[in-house]
Image 1 (cartoon, rainbow, N blue to C red):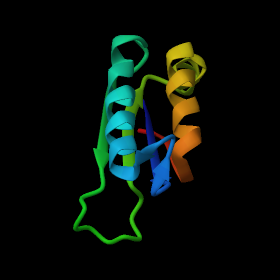
Image 2: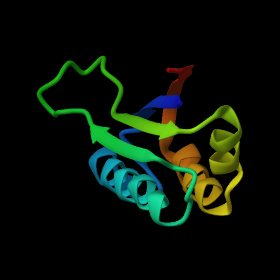
Image 3: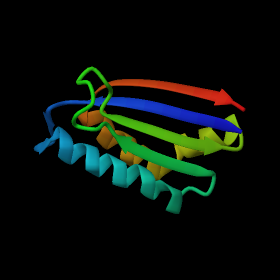
Image 4: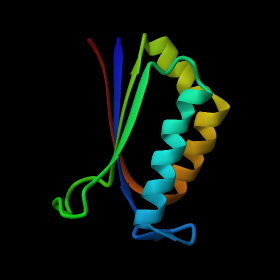
Length: 101
């Protein structure tokens, strides 16, 4: 099993929305991908608590896949690409780890 973990830092304002608004949109859109991409075994998105350190990332994505091949299918899926395009417009930083368990 592959665990795919991604962290995003978001701009204070982007696409006419605040960081908090964009975080909610991204959370909803990413979690909804499970309805379109059967290769996703599990997906969870967390928004950094407002009282947590400001140096934290703004969003954490945790997802599980059977293999790197099914992770690739997810990443190439048109619905994922649509969501990723929006994230690309509002993010300032990104970090990711894919590991096998």
